[in-house]
Image (cartoon, rainbow, N blue to C red; front, side):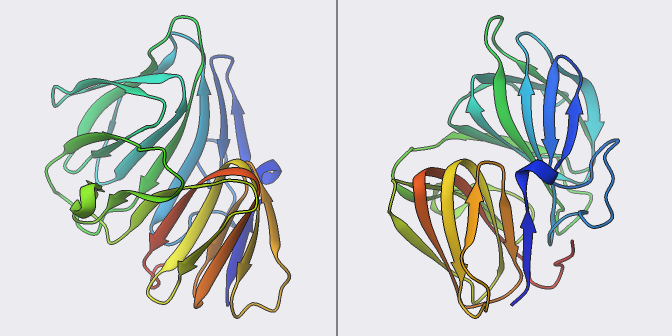
Amino acid sequence: MVMYLRKANERGKASLGWLDSHHSFSFGHFYDENHMGFSVLRVINDDIVQPSRGFDTHGHRDIEIISFVISGALEHKDSAGNHHIIPAGDVQVMSAGTGIMHSEYNASKTSPVRFLQIWILPNQKGLAPSYAQKTVVNEQGLELLVNGDGSHGALAINQDATISRLKLSEGQRFSFDMSNAAGYLHIIEGAAAVHASGSSEHDVEMKEGDALGIEEGDEVSVVAKRTLIALWFTLPHSEVST
């Protein structure tokens, strides 16, 4: 059993006045050779953007970019002609492929927007760029948001990986099957105790902003200590690195 614990208060930080960001992995001016990513997961930035401010038009290529809006609303524009508002509870996927220019702005003139910016390496380079968006149902339990083929109502990315939203009430338990993939749990809100079968360690206590990566095992059990909202990633075993 290999476990990777990323504590919220140890993440990289960027405070630019209009932007407050916490970087789970090395990003921009924050570099830490011990936190370069987990499997094909390369970026989780927890961003708060002030009203009417945002990221000016810039380019990407050969990366899968996922945005999960926690509060407020995000305005997206790109060089493929997409122009959308992404409200709280929506998730968007942009496959940069051969190259795309885009901007991301707070859609409100009065309230901040908070969202998770997530980057995943693709399993194939040089594909055509694409964009998609969906609304989270907001039910209890586990809801699939993103996977590798767009099945079961999920948004598709070019990688053998999934992203699901986990919502539990205080005291509720949920278990993940770890037999075929590595797993990564990122806490958005609330608190949880997490136990991985096969581990000699005690339960891992987690709170907002904490994350836990597990390279291999049979099962991971999550018990909500407070109302819990989290993202659960399944990722390829063969490329696990931190």
